[in-house]
Image 1 (cartoon, rainbow, N blue to C red):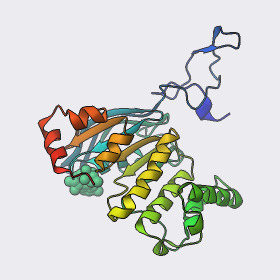
Image 2 (tube, rainbow, N blue to C red):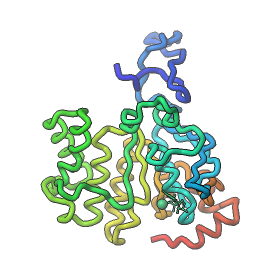
Image 3 (cartoon, rainbow, N blue to C red):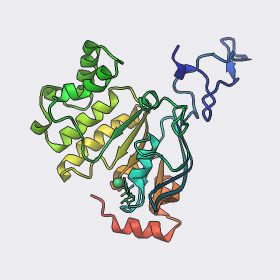
Length: 286
Ligand code: ADP
Ligand code: MG
């Protein structure tokens, strides 16, 4: 049984007692290692508390706290330099927070004893600049991590890569190198690549900002499809229509803090803060 299928206290990763329904309709206290489905409602996938990050004397994150439950899609918007990328990078420890707690899928990332290599496997990340390996084909880009980390045999990884390429609509590009692909196609390969490790949480940092306008839709559609499968996602984006459509929660970040958060309707149509209003008025929907 995988560790993930145990009943876990979401904040600590320790097992907890819970009452479960029996076949005859009654309830019993579950043994501490009783399995629950991956889709147990209310399970917290990401917990961030009092996150601070400074680069030397530059304070970039100034006390961020937020949570994402399983299947949540959270869109982060905010002006350039407000710390959005730094925040995402602190979630998988690409940047080491100055202080605070980050827990992803039960792994306390900020605990100095955590096995980071293992913990990072539950997090997929997609960047603005696709960052594909230029010397590898689309298929081999996707196969790379699972094979390199010994998670899959070559055959299995290849089958997975082809399945993922099909999912992002690029079955015919398996043997193409990045330079033979458009920006939108490269970004779809990058998404497929980050799905190869079966992540529990996906982070997107402005996934369409480097794309020509006509390619934005195809990438957003792949992300929407992913959302419909119940993937937990945190997405930094300036695509407001997309955020409105896909997000359960919109977070507006400014100057290293969360200035406000709520449903897309709350934040976009009825922002509480003047600065949110001002920012939104400057963003032109494409
Ligand atoms: P955003 O993604 O919202 O545009 P960033 O998180 O990229 O913001 O950057 C926030 C601030 O942190 C900026 O002032 C940026 O220059 C600074 N910053 C980001 N990464 C580093 C770094 N590795 N070293 C020093 N300063 C950095
Ligand atoms: Mg950024």
